[in-house]
Image 1 (tube, rainbow, N blue to C red):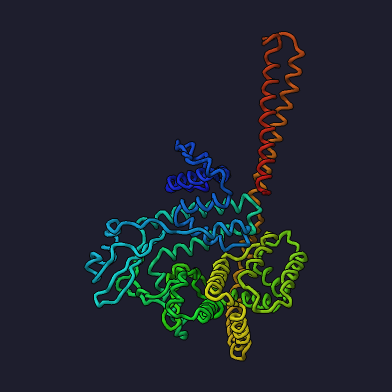
Image 2 (image 1 turned 120 degrees about the horizontal axis):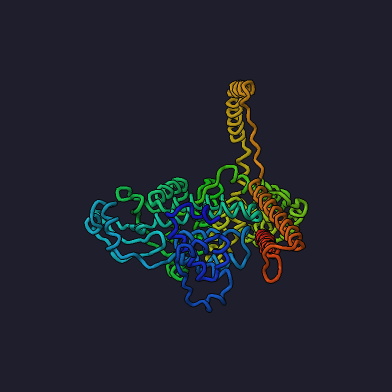
Length: 567
């Protein structure tokens, strides 16, 4: 596992840093199971563990959170994603990972100047009429400075931290290799699809590193929300925007977390909650492209009870099929139709249904949905219901598709913000009309005709290529070139187990031969002696003892490894 995890010497330095942090935070078992401790020993690097007593008293979730914060932006972002995965982690882990933050000390402007000079084509003080050297905000990936264009327009300049791209890429390479090793060697993790989870996470993080891509996403969402005048997305200034820096309009408003200023500004909390819910629901249900991190720090309230959204680095995407499944799930929850909920969850489980008790799962889902029977719609919490559904999945070792993790996180954040604004806010009352409207639109004659035409086009395309495909297949069969690929899961693992078993059997036969041969030699007189006994016979018995101990150690390690996998 070690060689596969490292994949070359290019990441050995970063691997040492990761292992050191994990050990320092009491997560040494994880280091051992990933094979990192042996690598560090061979590299001759010493691990220093200050404050070991204090760290040892922390619970594992708290230790993990601290370790992730120290490891930097890649792992902070991963922890924030996992905080929305109630289908993977228990409540105590979710609560602790939700505390993760990426606030770090800002980079001095002098360290940013070479990068800014290259991207902007000059010093920031000359490119802009005004440029504040003190950052407005700083996070692990980028920091923001206020500025003013030559025409007097107030803007913010978002600057990516120097060398952050290289660190993130090294982390993603290691995470990908760890995930592949974990999915192959720990069968209990396979239903949670760690490889796919890391792949989706890497794609999302790479998009977030591209600050120009963030602006493209902001403009796309702004076009989708153009019909809602109560929403404002900051305009992008492309003349100054590149991969490592972007410039957007400065939003002058009340920060989402400052509810006292909302009241002092005379804004209508109830109306703000309703409008915010409608905006996020439209992005999710209708557009399939949504702000995946709508926490209070990314929301501003403007005069006229308008809402501004900023920071589109983390954006979720839902294809049409997934949106239809989501609609079916939400309507099944709200309208108490357990069979529809079970159908969607089983479809999301995909190929990871081995050993699944379908009847028990359906019974638990029916009991879960039935507990809300007779409960007024105003008292239903969609975010809480989604979180509880994912806990049912976790109990049955099923996992949500990775693209839905951001969705549930957005739902929970949105509902929490709505209730902070208005204690009487009810997401269900806002969501149900839109859900029914979208479902009704799906069965309008025009929509049905459009889907029918798309299906007919695809069918004709397949039929058009069928003769050529059959001809190619028959030609290969005539020339003996037809091959059938059979992919047997865990075949490599089975081969390794057979090889270990055969090696142990061979060692046992050698030990038995030594014992029998030594016993015969002991009965034969003459020849050299050792301690008054025939030397060759005594040496044979000693070799048999050493071989027996080695065989017992191998068997014990095999049992121990199997126990770890079952955990």
